[in-house]
Structures are given as C-alpha cells and as structure tokens.
Amino acid sequence: MAIESISADHLQLIVPNLHRRYSGVTATNRMVAPKLARMFRAAWLGPDAPDGIARMGLSDLLKLWRRGTPLIWHARRNNEMIAGVLLRSLGWPLKLVFTSAAQRHHSWITRWLIRRMDAIIATSDISASFLKREATVIPHGVDTDTYAPPVNRAAAFAESRLPGHYAIGCFGRVRAQKGTDVFVDAMCRLLPRYPDFSAVVVGGITTEQTAFASELKKRIEAAGLGSRIVVTGELEIADVQRWYQRLTIYAFTSRNEGFGLTLIEAMSAGAALVASRAGAAELVVEDGVTGVLTPPGDVDALVVALAPLMRDPAAAAAMGQRGRARVLVKFSLDAEAAGIAEVYRKL
Image 1 (spheres, rainbow, N blue to C red):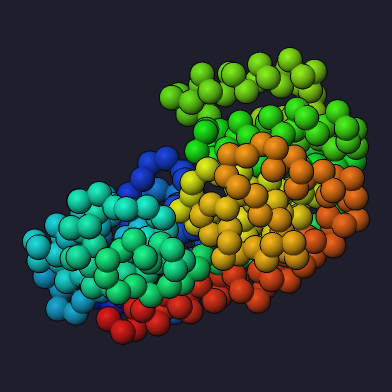
Image 2 (cartoon, rainbow, N blue to C red; image 1 turned 135 degrees about the vertical axis):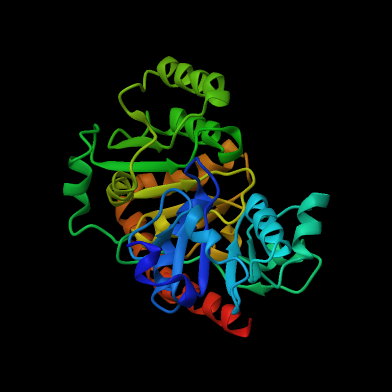
C-alpha cells in the first residue's frame, strides 16, 4: 500500500524507521504501527515496513513541506528525533513524539532533543525517571495472536529436529549485553543433568561480536554439547515466532536492556520464564508466579532458577500458562496502541 492510497493532504501520522539493521526497536515499531494505522491515516518511512500500513518515500515526504495542517512524527531513536527537529525547522508541520525505553542517563544530545519533543512516551516508570521531563508511561505490547502457544508443543518441538523432548531458549543478538555467555555457561552445567532438554540461541552475530561468539562455540564444544546447544544466526521473523512455540522455558539473560520485548513474546507463547532483573523484567514478571527473577550476569543464580523447571516440565508448562494469561491482561498490543493513540489525540 503506497501513500497515494491515503493522500498526502490527509496523512496524520509518519512512523519513521531510520535504521538499516533490524533491531528490537524495529520489532516493537513493526508490531504496533499497523494497529495505529487502523486509528490514524499513517505511513511508514524507511526499511522493514510491516503489512497493514502505507509506505512512503522521500519524494512523498517532500510533498508535505509547508502543509497547512500538522501531523505526528513518532521517533524512537536519536537520528529520528534529529530528522524530525530538522524537518520542522525547515517548514514541515510536524508534532514530535519520542518513545524512550532506555534505563540510563542520557547523553547531552539526547537530552537536548528530548526537550524539543511535543510529547514523550516511556515504556516503564524506570525509563521515565531518566527523562527529566513529564512523560506518559505506556508499556510495550505484543501481538498475542501471532505470539501464541502452539496447538501441540511436543509436535512443534519435533519440527526442530533437536535431541530430546523439550527446548530452552535465549533470543537476541549474540553479545555480552544480552548475556548470551551467561546462558551458554548455565546450559553447559545443566544439560548434562537433564538429557531431555536441548538449548537454542536465536539471534544474529555482528562482525564486532565474532570473537565473542567464537569463544562461546569453543565452550559448547569443550562441554561436548555441540548437538544440544544450537546457535541459529539471524532468522526471518516467522521463523523466530516458530522457535518461540517450540520452547518449554525461556531465559532472558540481559545484563542491561531498554524494555526487553522477548520477555512478553516468550510469555505470550506460553513458555516458562526465568529473567534477569534488567529492562522491564520487574514490571512484567510476578516473581515465582509468572516467572522467576535473577540478578543480571549471575550464572549460579540462573542455574538455580532453571533447574526446578527443567526437572519438572509440567510445572514449567503451568508457569507458561500463567504468564500467557498475564500478557493478555497487561501487555497486549491493543492496550499499547490505545495508549499511544491518546497521546496523539492530545496533540
């Protein structure tokens, strides 16, 4: 669907995605944008456009110069804020919105840009506390229809061709920030004790992380687990979704994180969750009920938390069901879109 099907004169919302590499920010943007496009006349600017929203190019953007009525520019990165501020200064009639998931002190340029936004959204109270200005807290949501439990988890696992009967996974780019090493070290200790389980790391390896990934593969081979700990590399989104459905347990091992969308994706798919206290984990997880929380970077604590669930897959399945129920109530995509839409309407 191109912008012509909406008409530049009637456009209300631009969703910029000014980042070439696919990332967690892109993933969250892709999920909520089609929902927003059902409420506003919207267009996506940049790569990785999802279905359900019109696409626009630079030529379409030029047509909006000095348009009479304003429209929303919803940024999620510094470069998108910079572009919005620059375009507005040159005559584009933009109302600027920024979503922040970061849980850290911002650089001076980010603080300068944030002060120039018309509205700020934070994905958690913690993220909001670092913004130094009023923000509306709207947690990320997940498409609970797309990220849904399989009809038959055993059959879904069988499609993976992994050894055993159950899978435990850790998703995200292979790097220290995501705690991939913590997960691998825990698996090297646990898998020999639980032969019914195999482990999977779903995520790409960037050039700068090649040495880190090579060291992890050496640890896996040294433990004799080359067939039971699989690193998939970068996958298409549909393949990632299928891997969620194969999991009995999901390990969120980030050392630091903005929100951590994989938390709610895994819970929505019905996997039991063990999560480090990073990103939105303490907002999302009811410790001991819908998941188990551990200190970031602590292999021993991760082993202790995972062992009971690997020992008792039925208990893991029950935890996964409770997690799914919590996501349906608290972290649906419809709830996120409704909150964002209210911010737009106030502008």
